[in-house]
Image (cartoon, rainbow, N blue to C red):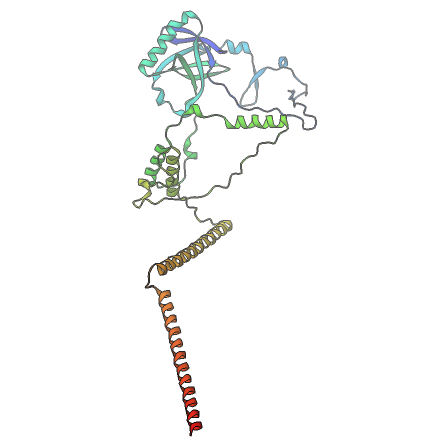
Length: 374
């Protein structure tokens, strides 16, 4: 562990030689500024504003600027000679419950390590005492030209020191709070509670930096001359019905965890158990009206198609019924019966006319025969 500070941890009359090392590392992607014409790196030169002379590190010192713009030079020796006990000692002044510290106040974490084998026993003693009491120690120490407020607690086998922001450095959250009165119903709260339960506990060990991986993939693609990864086009955000969005989110979360299929009814969906969908609210802009009209047109087309399908299905059922039953029913059956009756009547009239014609011809023939005989 690379030490960034060394001194003593004072615990009453017990003094523990310790060294401080960073508890975290960063995989933040960094870029260099280059000259676009020839890819040369961009360098910054420090110059004096009075004579514009280019300066080296040996030429540069530090000074404190007073409110009336006077400069007072401060050397490293001046800072080392400051009468501060916290320059080389973390003085524990009290204890508190670590959970009671405002999350806004937490800053950078460091590992405290024993600086020598002789420090091991008092180090372990303090670690175990803090763990048994469930407390964290509070103290101050000076590092990098400033004094820090520190919280020290047991963390596995080590003492973890976390710097704290000073209380007067915390800004009021009033400006970030929603303005005006916002009313939340019991149903909305119940659905939100259900969604929290459905999503389950987060496992921080499964999270990773997608941005860093994407940049590395981009660099690799450029080096190999292959196709660059394309970003997915995200659509504009929608204003949705809050209750419908909560219901849909609960169903999606439960479906992802295998607790119910898509569209599964929940107690929050209402007594009828109908599947709730996210409903887009009306937009005051013209584009929203066009989308609504298009949606209505699509719905009408679907309804017409459904109606046509229903008519064809009804026709098929009617045909089947006629084939299976000797007595057809319904409007179409009545009309068919009427047409059949009409056709039968016409046929009978034709038959009677034909019979009369035959009789008339036979009578004429008989009369002609009688005249010849006479």
